Length: 436
Ligand SMILES: *Cc1c(COP(=O)(O)O)cnc(C)c1O
Image (cartoon, rainbow, N blue to C red; front, side, top):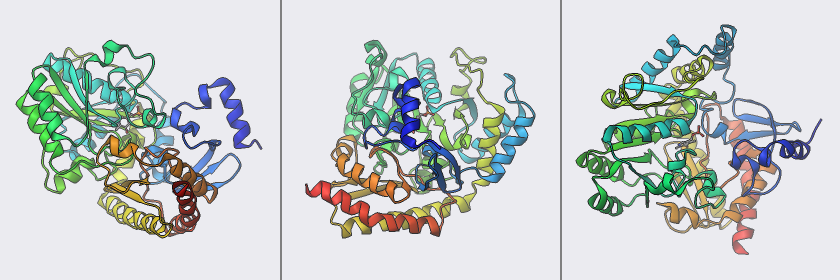
């Protein structure tokens, strides 16, 4: 049997950094990434046979837990019938209908393979619809790795401490205007100065790629008001929070709580594919019909709407009823409570932010975290110490302090006990770093 370290060394010889997505390499927390052998429900097993409570949940998709038997069976059945056809299937229409039934403003849906493609296409659509070039994004928010959106980005870009990426032509981000998040004044000023150049505003429904930083009351409504006044498109990126925070994503949570606004476009990913490579954009029919072949905005994909991916997504969403979301909300409160208590007991200053069941901790922060500057003021070294202590005690957290923590419907009392048993040592480790 190979160790994780041996597997990592072998991988590094043939794959840059040994990984296919940067955060997986443990660059910011140090140490050797766990190579995963298999997962079931709330548990994940590495190549050495160690078992962990998984709070990464494949970065969100495993809403029901890993390898849910009904989802796996649906994929097996579909696989028997062929892996890909490059032609339309009924399942795509069924999944589009499922999304429409959950997210009221969505009238039409286009399926793609990754969240990056979904947001890239949404931006192209906003530009095509308005005949303008400028896109507004917010600092610390992540919308995938397309050129135009790799400015002041969250997730792996934030983890690596990069301002952006090499290889992105200055021209590609020249039309990307980056504003501070949760700052209505900055947004009003941008529209006052450049309103007739702005094609659209893209925003995560709740930012969760600089840690979880939910919108302040009224911020999303202000975006909608300003974009509508200036005939610009509002794109709500639900790739992470969609179908996870509620049946209608975090947009649905805000709507339920009384903040009503109707975006032009949404992007979906992660949960929508149930763990398979699938993402989507959807919105007003008038805008969506600008996509080829009905309209002049080109977009295509050989594996788009893949039959295995769409059936995995459809089965996952069909199983994700209201009970799942209610249980996740309750469980998240319980796990956040335990975390808060343990950190207090060890004397570690911290903030725990949540958006429905999504949450993350900012170690060393004494003040509320509302934007990227606040998020960057956390103590990343304390998180590394905390992370490794938890990992040693059987809990797999995101290997970066800029990522959200994910629970699933399969997390139970046994996993909670492993989590709470691991907390005291991890909090002590963080306290040691902060205390110097
Ligand atoms: C993960 C993510 C993306 C990118 O999706 P990929 O499938 O990784 O390309 C885009 N937007 C948000 C909000 C995300 O969390």
